[in-house]
Length: 285
Image (cartoon, helix red, strand yellow):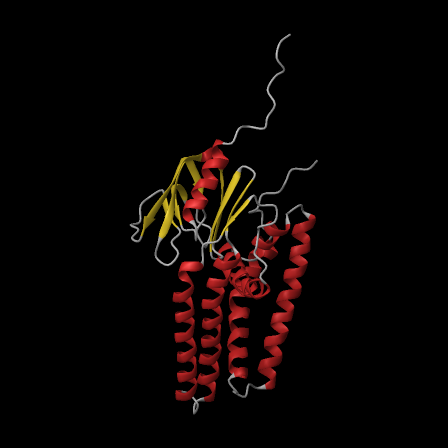
């Protein structure tokens, strides 16, 4: 079997595509905003813009297929064409918007087969609803104030509507992504940007501890909900909890919140102290 290629083995084509994308895609966004705002864009400019975007997508598709044939996985091939921070940011935004649909349909994420499910979004609901209401009021007010400036009104309206959806998406992601316990792993989550699996044998101690202030410290991660955490988990060894843009973050102390923290602590304690199911050697005759 041939060796797996390194993720950084870019061809000359893939090295040229990134700077080209940095020029073409922002220009296309600017054109789209102008069109939505009612600005008359010359037909030749629009045609050139669309041609460049279609050409870029076509070349990216060819490069993607070439990387796949060389043995790259789908994610590795995509990472060669798009910077990882951009991929992570796009994935985060898509998870937020997808969470709105899950929230409406009452379909929590990642709970299939879990031995225990522990919601954690209840104590932030009033704050998030209030923030969303303020954003709606601001949207209406700005629409009234900018009614005489069609282009600026359209741009601000798009941003304001997206802000409302973003705030609701944050709460929806928390509501549809509870902490879960299954097998030998506890899965701790916060909205759509933190999702860490901690092996139970890595946990040194777990306790119910209500905190409303959290100072930043190396090796500690506070997943506060409504500015509070209620469960502290100390680890025997570090686990990596990557930041939003992929930077590593080893932690040995995790503080999280749960709607029913004592129940969460009891479940974790039982799971950690449960007898092993592995069969020992048969007794001697």
